[in-house]
Amino acid sequence: MTALLDDMIADRIRRADYHDWRAKVEATGGCAKPIRLSGEYGLVDTLTERLIHHHSGTVMVPCGNRREAVCPACSDRYAADAFHLMRAGLSGGHKGVPTTVTGHPRAFVTLTPPSFGRVHNQPTTAGGKRRPCACGEFHHDHDPRLGAPLDPDAYDYVGAVLWQAHSGALWNRFTTYLRRRLANLGGLRVGELADHLRLSYGKVAEYQRRGLVHFHAVIRLDGPRGHETPPPAWATADVLDQAVRSAAAAVSVETVRPDGTTLPLAFGAQVNVRTITRDQGDDDQDGIGEDALAGYVAKYATKGTGKSEAADRPIRSQADIDFLRVSDHHRRMIQTCWDLGEHADYATLNLRRWAHMLGFRGHFLTKSRAYSTTFGAIRGDRRAFRLAELLAAADLDPETVVVIGEWDFAGVGHHNDAERELAAAIAESKRAHRQRAYREENRS
Image 1 (cartoon, rainbow, N blue to C red):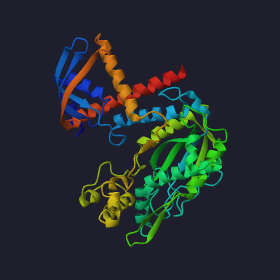
Image 2 (spheres, rainbow, N blue to C red):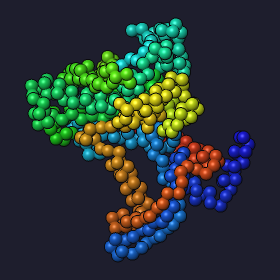
Image 3 (cartoon, rainbow, N blue to C red):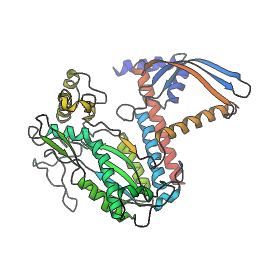
């Protein structure tokens, strides 16, 4: 098979259109599953309305998938965008956020799901020494049993899936409770809080090994006009810490089990609140640096569920579940989503649509309006920069030249294994180049 693939790669490189094809792939960053479009575009001078250039043919557009398991190239781009989005809200100085936000109370908050049954884990002593799991064994870091139930028959799969499906609503209610608690601590009525303080946050969901998400959030207290104004003097880091812990303990939502009994859903008892420091050095147990935190968030935003991945694509039938290459635990969660999808009480949850996500129905990275910039703005800036760069290289004025195009969908992905291997090599080369440039920049 390797020899055949090598022959296919060599044949692809020798073909007359290789350099044109490679240029298109490089334009996508080496996307693993690019969207192919056919059509035409023209460059028009808006001052004279003269057509400067016309071209027809095919182009490739990046798939944009955030998961590294699906497309490493687009995952890298998503992680970089997530880094800049979170970094802007942490330290300011770009993306329309002033540097004064570093003086606002800020905390890195982790909210976890509750227990739905005992699972294999790696417990440690207070001094950090590894202890045996409840099963009596010591699990290595890549043991596939980690996160799986000790007793699958006793594990509450229905409760776990329903918690996952309602976790977005639980977060929204948490922010409501948090505002109420802040108003109370400030001696204000809830309706008065917006005149004194604004709650800003950036939140990312990360899968645990047991297949449930926990939330990591940067929470910042701003003045009434968002990051442009400082919060009132009473809104300190200690007040934020107290309000977060109080809101996390109080918030809950209710649903019902298939048998009609009430099921209250809440966050787990493990709540972590760390003050965000201005320094860019190593973080410690009490605080965390801005650069380290932005990097953590970018990593969380692109990772999957751990060593045993859930499905990367929606489940279409029972046969999909039967033949998935996932752990027994994740298969059981997916099966529970699929089965509950037939129940009338859960029709609005659309659980079958989200079965491949183990019931989680939210976005992996969300933010409040005033936290920082948006993904759309970051991507728009990148497109504008690249267009201006190309026009400048052609000695054209970006202010007076516009691009007019018409494109139709032509397909998805590369045509064969040879093209996929070459695209992967291009993506890896670009990643290595970025890493070298980053190291050199930080040495200087």
